[in-house]
Image (cartoon, rainbow, N blue to C red):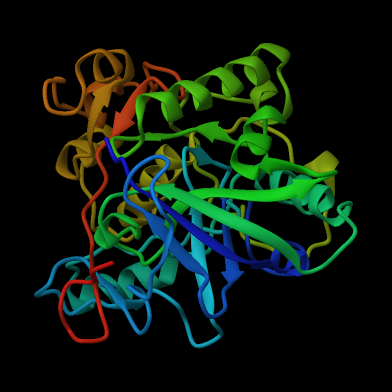
Length: 336
């Protein structure tokens, strides 16, 4: 468990969220300036401004050719909100290691797919932020980490919690989304036990009230609708944005399988597909009791039946994320 804490100060443009922009309910771009990043190695330790991410890039490994700027040319950091997963607003499957022929076949059937309630979740967030009365909004992003390479995921997104100030008090927007029922709890092994317990408690109370998406939450991993696509700039019609919604992680797998199947790339059932593309995970109770080193390693496909039904609920699994490496401007691993 990390003992260090990284804090990033910046501003959040509310207009980036759909339907004015394309940001969804769990990802946003934060504009940062000089001295925006500060780090402390332990609780109550001394804060130190860090330039570890100046001109840095994020790679899947030191030898990987893939690279994503930690801070883009517009001085923005993309933040993926930790512990939550809002229904997908736009997801385009991007399978790897396809032949030229397979890529051509996939292109004909692929799309920018969305889930029902993806628009509603984003609009609810944007309306809440708009009521704060200023734009852009000052924000702070916090993430518990020990090393610079713990900060970003393989897609170059900073994983953390986003805070705004409302009437003199800090509000954790990740937690707000859970409280309002607009996001599923989605847990990862990098989270501390306390972070996991907080997320589960907030989601549990929203679920009990059937708030937001919980009224429509489903465990049936079938019936993918390839006609339900991202609609840029709206219009938003809440009455049409309702219906069964599965966990976004499963939706991403299901949409990829569905288009690959249609393009005659994937063979067999959805369960076969999950087995061929395993997601490492732990049962949450086991993870909280034993920790990541002693917990029994499982796979997502073990919790899906042959009838494509998810056998556990949201928050009952802790996923192991793929690693990433942050490389500093000098071409070496970034250091504080």
